[in-house]
Amino acid sequence: MPEADDKEGERYQADKPQATPGFFLKGSHQLDWGMKNRLARTFNPRSGRTVMLAIDHGYFQGPTTGLERIDLSIVPLLPACDALFCTRGVLRSVIPAESTKPICLRASGGPSILRDELSDEQIAMDMDDAVRLNATGVGIQVFIGGEHETRSVHNMTKLVDAGLRVGIPVMGITAVGKDMVRDAKYFRLACRIIAELGAQYVKTYYVEQDFETVTASCPVPIVMAGGKKLAELDALTMAYNAVQQGAAGVDMGRNIFQSDAPKAMIAAVAAVVHQNMKPKEALELFKSMKAKG
Image 1 (spheres, rainbow, N blue to C red):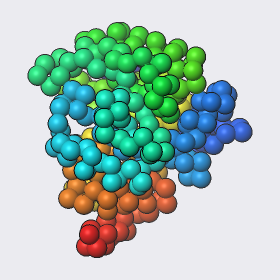
Image 2: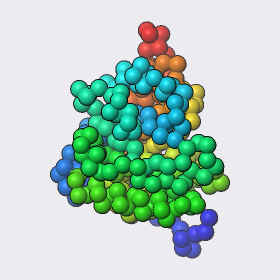
Image 3: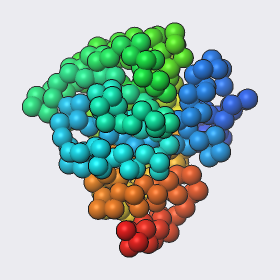
């Protein structure tokens, strides 16, 4: 990947947090009251972090393993998460209307897993519907370096404009193509572009080397994508490292709902994210809760 300049990214100063006068969340202190209120419901003001439960996979994958029956597998987990990331179809058809859990709605779509090129996405819902559904945010894929990069960027900026009109924040999601290198250099580029063009927070993947430069160089909160299913200790370690290196929480799906004890796993993830519990201690919490059923 070409350098932005000859000395790309030498001065991250990850040890110096970005100032947020008057509000707890990075890069959000100058937003409107309604948007800050929605962010304060999505992110816990005490810890400054969130455990989002991602169950939007069906928008291009269909009935993903663990999401075949959302009413049975996911609804019981709602009390344990800080926010739910789902599609409007699932929200209307399955999630109980009496739930007060903050909702972030998947707002992009297009190609399915039957297609080789997944970057050909469009905005797939109107912001008026997000208002109608009382959403606290919307999320959209941005394919930096992908075949349809420019369109996906414009999709996001249109959604940001619509969100600013009604006070709903946008989560820009870094979508990595099959041929893209998943390293800190790429994610610094992708996350910064997404933030520069107006997203109020960014969802991206964790990388073991230099992840703190990704979070430090992004002026808005980053939440870590859970990605593929890992062994419980590996998933807890990834979440722990991400928040210790500057992430404002996780948006985790398969590592929770594909676990053989999802309630225990989401509790362990929450302990890591909100209480800074060490991964091995969180694993013991997981095993203890799993044993109790």
